[in-house]
Image 1 (cartoon, rainbow, N blue to C red):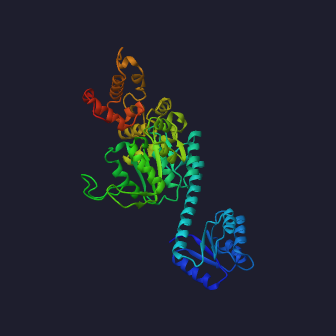
Image 2: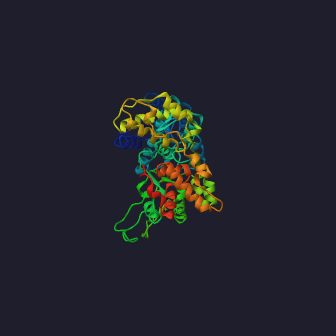
Image 3: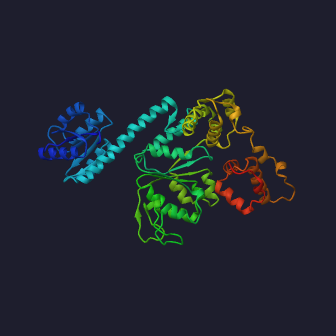
Length: 463
């Protein structure tokens, strides 16, 4: 049962009573008034969140009532009932903040839909206000943490764009928290009670990505033994995150652009188009302008996705947040592994503050998770950190002698040696190596496949 209170203002008794009974049957608390004067009296005593008012009434008409309500409170949503909506009336009411119109005779299904939508907006507004207070008091927004100026700016951008339907392009290095930003945008939007579906374009083979995104019909291709619902349809009414959008094949990008523009898709092997209502967010660890210039990202798709941009800072750019991040991550990891690890020692914190964190917050998370597992007490010491922690592998990457490069070495050979040396320095941790090299995990795997991985066979198993 919804808790919204609805005040119905209508001078015709039968219409007023009937409308109140109907709306009450939908679970709302209702009160009635015969005109604007009585409505203002009821507003103070009843405290409605929604007012449904006729326009033509004695003593005080609906338009004047709206003006008076605007002076009293900006939180009351108004729905106007009119026999005929004119452009002039709509313009004037719109400036006063009227939420919606409905014409007589009232379409009750549409009225119920209007009330539901208003309820979602009001709930979102209340939640956003609560989260803003949390942001001010604790330096947090959802699962995002940070009191630093860069993170406060990120929070501000999220708050601005979340209630809208705009597409958002989230950029930043691997491990900076781009998916968390997308989840926070979803959680602060009116779509928060609908699905949030993330898909990593770099982790799906090119031959399957269209099926994953758009779905397919039975028999659409070899191996399609049954109909498959794609990510767009799974996210219906909610939010779809296309992570590593720059790794999506260009041909698939063209089909994606059409769905974004027409809000319709066609499953592979289908002759029928399906309407979809999905908000699309995209993320990439590449500089999008460079990806466009190199032909990896279609320019028209880039413009369509980049309605609003949020660029996540690297952890080294807001190290003052490490203390807060450590507290949050320790609480999360302690619960996950059923441990009671409360904090890190000052020596560990100082080491964290001096480290460059090439893997960003993801590397901090992985480091703390390992420490929580091996720690037997309540405090993480330096001995609980991974062996050699803090010794950057970048000198191996930046030192030509370490790669044994000689005169006449080709670019391809230098690249191969660079990749294999980086893998060796990370003990074959491919995720970490990809982060250090500044390439996607998919690209790294493709390079190793090209090399046949002869030297890689002697390395330790991947962590």
